Image 1 (cartoon, rainbow, N blue to C red):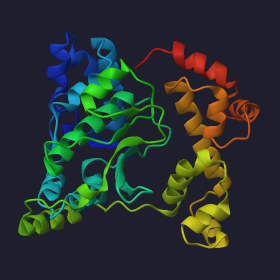
Image 2 (cartoon, one colour):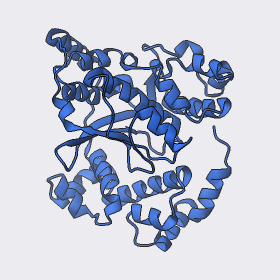
Image 3 (cartoon, rainbow, N blue to C red):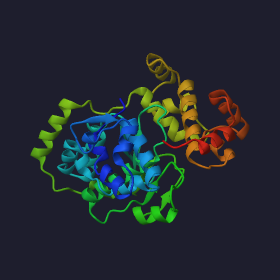
Image 4 (cartoon, helix red, strand yellow):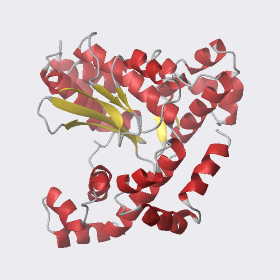
Length: 337
């Protein structure tokens, strides 16, 4: 479901007006109402939220609109989910609560903390679950801006990410990102998120176990905890392993501790196959990189796990009826929502 709480746009109208644009007009074009803004009891369409953030960036001329809005939001936008996080015993358990019950805030989003290859580093990842989402650069920067504020609340006001990860090219000067996050920023990254010291996960919080238990019981009554289906797990592994070029059914099955035939049967029960999922991920990644980055086509072929640029051209003709260069030109000239 492409839904999110109205608190996702907390402070939106005020920021738009301060920057000299008409918030009511932007909201109306995105089929949103002022009454929903900042209201945790109201769900709004997430695609509309994505669209209005992009439109506000254009209307105000603020390429950093999402990050500016992030400065006006914090853990309060999560409602009871935020309470569960603040009353957890450690930072790690607070983040686990947010991951586990993210559907309470938005069924359209998922977050997770991934241990790094080095035990000293962990990665926070944010993603949209909707298939073929629209360009969502402002929404992603808003999400990471708010997440950094949540981390500072939980882990301490001196928290800084080790490295910020953005899947798109910079929308303003690169130095502006470094000033905002206080950390190096990696653009055209494979995920949206940031790396941070894994030791923070064990940092104790001023927890209240009684309140934490009550809030968790409440969350259990209004949300299904987020648990990846087999298809979700396979897609996540494909995205992560695609640039290695060494990706096949046997390798994915091994990572999931399953026999290939067992995995094939489970995917068939979901009406799909490994080959179809791999092709879908490649197509979605291709259009995103062509739309949001200026990555050279030869490099993009490698990122998609294709043998050479000609294979990328053939795939794009099959997917879109156009060459990669034609797709990029169309994206560059298309009006932004």
